[in-house]
Amino acid sequence: MSQVEERLSRLGWEVPTPPAPVAAYVPGVKVGRMVYTSGQLPFSGGELKYRGKLGEGVSVAEGYEAARLCALNCLGVVKALAGDLDRVERVVKVTGFVASAPGFQEQPQVVNGASELLVQVFGEAGQHARSAVGMAELPRGACCEVEMVVLLKGE
Image (cartoon, rainbow, N blue to C red; front, side):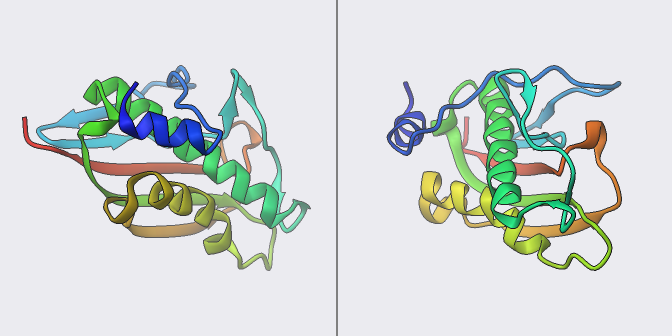
């Protein structure tokens, strides 16, 4: 088990096997030392855990947990492509999409679920540039979706 996975385990989380794509795409692409994940939904154990819209039936706390699940699924993609999460040199960029009811403006607090997990796991190397965007709808009715860009250590 990698050091990163041991840290995750101590925090009560584990890196999942990447979920199968729900359309015509791949879960992620490795180009040189960069890994670009596709958007990941809040799946756990093969089940979509959080559906609906923030500000309309889904609380910020639930959205935060959903974003954390999305980030864990992104890490599963990174691990599958890099072979080992200890190869992560830096999390470069995170983009969070939040299904939002009209007037909901707390997308950054929701996407903090992903961002704070990455900092807990990678420390300073987990600090990243980020966008948190409100959306009318997301695939399968998910309340959020997260994608990330990661730089790997030299080969």
